[in-house]
Structure formats: C-alpha cells, structure tokens
Length: 91
Image 1 (tube, one colour):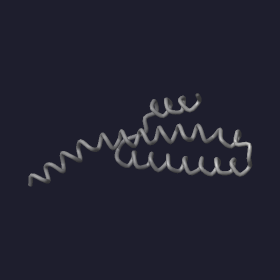
Image 2: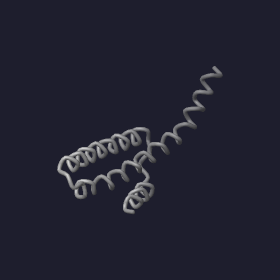
Image 3: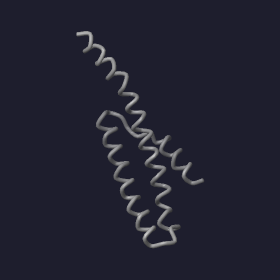
Image 4: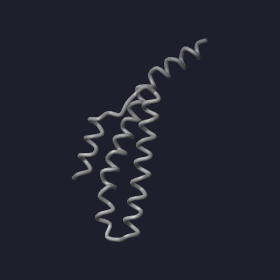
C-alpha cells in the first residue's frame, strides 16, 4: 500500500517535469528547423545541400512526434519558448 502511494505521488510530480522536458525538446527542434532551413542555400555543394534537406525533414518529423507526445499527455508546446529558440538561430 505504501509503495502505491509513493508511486502515485512520483507520477503526479514527474508529469510537470515531463511536460517541461518535452516543451524544451520541441523548442530545440524549432531552432534546428530554423538553422537547417538555411543549410540548403548556403551548402555550396549539391550533396551537402541534399543532406541538409534530408535532415530538415527528419527534424520536422521529430518535432511533430514530440508535439504529439506532449499533447497526448495533456500538455502543449510553449510558443514563447519556441520563438525564443528560433530567434536564437537567427544570430
């Protein structure tokens, strides 16, 4: 009985941490998308441009998976955090 109460308490306190981690991951993916979207234009080599484009698609897919998981847990991405990371990619 005690371990059940402990595990319930652990789940209740770990959910906000999980939301925060997933929101951070979503923001990091947003920054990566911003950076990779420039890669194809500045690559200077067709093969490197292709690799940037491929990685950009993978990153978009990863961001979508993170968003889906976050929403499945009842959370949502943090627009301010996403925007902040994207702005950081402009420097």
